[in-house]
Length: 424
Image: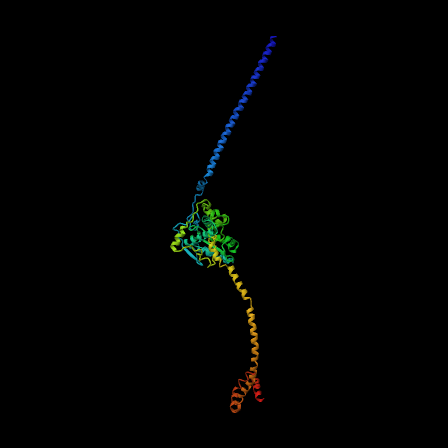
């Protein structure tokens, strides 16, 4: 009996121990789970905080792009005369001076670019392509006149003055920011089309220049799709001299002058605003009350333009080009056609012919009288025969005249008819 009781007690104790052990294990596991969940929640909360902080920092970074831009776009522009940057954010210095040389037609260019220009024009002509300069070097007065005219044009189109001024700046450079004032820009037109607009890109002249101008140090200054960089609309007529080395490098990379020099794009810079007081001062100095819109005299002469200042830009010279274009070769051809029409009505000549016909009948009646006079003529001839009445004298002269008679054999027959009438 004692053994059985001991066994039961041992078994009971063993069961209690097992239950306690199991309870301890379960408690430990549960406690571990609680700690893990708390830790995860803390980690998540910290992650949220870190994420919010990172987002806040990124937002602050994005909120100050201008500061970053200023740091990134630190310009280091060269001092080379041929690479001088002239645009809305880089105006010419007030003391800028340049030595110019005439290229004909009233146009001038920086004397240092003259030889390359002449070589390019001669090469084009050798290939059967004829290009003409419509705009070249401009004075400040002329640039002001062109810019003012473009603003007035916008106002006439019902734009506000501010809108007209902004639009004008994309077509005609603000005075002081035009490459034409530096003597390094030329506006070209082709012989078959002399207007400064985008149709110029389809001409033989533009196609030749686009392919070969780089060999002579020139570049297409305002290419298509680069307005945000250059600040000027697409101008297939505006070419700029930069020197052969830089031009060839820009041709390979497809860069604009701003991109090649590492300059700040116009869209990210601070463009120069046009001050109308400049025009007022010029008007007072010259005594003018209005800015002459047709100032450019150098556009039509050479047909060396064509314009493009323009545009011309526009015609950068857009206002200029249109005037030279006015001498429009096509229009010149049309007027001749018009005069030919009035000339073609040959009705008046036809009418004049009939009066000549009645005059003809008047002449025939006059013909018979001379016929009656002809018979009278022979009696005049008989007067000559009485002269031979002196036989001795006339005989001697004929003997002397005998030698000449044999030379013209036709004379004797003529003398015979003359003798016959007297016989009759």
